[in-house]
Structures are given as C-alpha cells and as structure tokens.
Amino acid sequence: MKPEIMLLGTFHMAVEPEMIHKHSDELSSITASLQEWNPTKIGVEKSFFLEEEINKRLKQFLQGEQAPAYDEVEQIAFPLAEALQQDRLYPVDEMVDMSTPSLDQVFSWAEEHQPELLKEILTIQQSVKQMEDKQTLAGYFRYINDEDYKKQLKRVYMKLTRVGDRQHQIGVHWLKQWHHRDLAMAANILRTAAPGDRILVLVGADHLHLVERFLKESGDVTI
Image 1: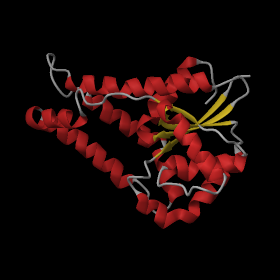
Image 2 (image 1 turned 180 degrees about the vertical axis):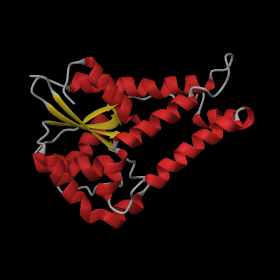
Image 3 (image 1 turned 180 degrees about the horizontal axis):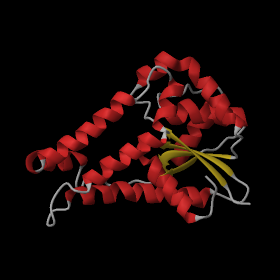
Image 4 (image 1 turned 30 degrees about the vertical axis):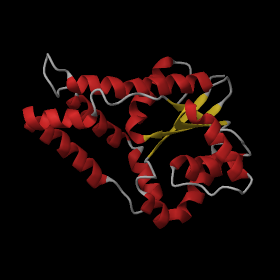
C-alpha cells in the first residue's frame, strides 16, 4: 500500500507572533482537525542537523517541562504529536546556501536594469498579500493552501527567471538554490515514507506547489 502524504502549507509564526496571540484559541481546534487524519508520522520543515534538538524539545514539551516557542513546529506539531502519542518528529528540510546570489541581489538587479519586470513581480506579490485572510488562523491556512495562491506564487517564480540577461542569469541562479531545497524536501519525505504510512508534512507555503509536484511525479506516494 502506497504511503499517503498530506502537505500543509504554513506561514512562519516567528515572523507573525501577533497571529498566535490573537488567535491562540484556534490552535487547539486546528490540531484536533489534523488529528482526525490520524498521521503515523509528522514531517517538519527543519534541517536534519536539528533533528536531535527538535526531538529533545518535543520530549521536554511532552513531559510538561517546555512551553512551545513561536514556531509552527512547536505550536502545531508538538501538540499534535502529544495528541497522537508520538515522541518523534521527522525533519525534511535541507541546508542550502541562498547567498550566491541573494534574493536582495536579484531585486537590486531588476530595480536597476529591469524596472518594469520588477513592477510586475511586486504587483503580484502585493495582490497576494491583499488577498490573505488573517481574520482567523483557519482562514489564513485555508488561503495559503488554496490553488489560486499556489498559482500566483508560480507566476512570481517564472517572472524571477527573467531577471538578468543571457550572460547574467541572476534570477535563474537564485531559483536553482531555492528549488534545490524543494527537490531535497521531496526526496527526504520519500525517504521517510514506508508502506502504510500516513505522513503529515508542515511546509512553508512558498515551497508547497513544487514539493507537491515532485511527490506526485514520483508515483510512489498518494497525496
């Protein structure tokens, strides 16, 4: 029986702790909803280098010795693992040097040499931000996992490929780094999956569409 994978696109809660303060009561209902799927494993967007530390903190949380930090792993995966009586999380991310070039360098090039293209990119990004529903956590999660949201992110990435010229493929080089992570995450999820598994993976929403695509194309799992 093929392993089943549920990908949940998330936002990085450490960047928006006010969302947790404002909607903390919703977290338990979100956890309860995810528990209904009864995953056998929980994957998280963290590097394997952090596996020992994450599971050490999980153990402390399960023993009542550690309050969860403002982090999607600790706010969602920790309580879910407790509800499922699991004592281990599975990091699936990859450490990738994203500095050659950096995203700032990509945007700086576009600002200097391709201002109209930069305007197109920023317009899409702004429209995406304006559509985000932050009235509730459930609404926010629903939107960043929506097909239209993923479609708009794909447009941004394809426009980034055009930043530069034939001698300076600066946008393409940045995306190679980004997509290295997407491919590695998909590979790590597949390595984690055993027959009969049901794996819930918390992944940053910006990675969602490609990780999902790579998993589907493997033919080895059911999404």
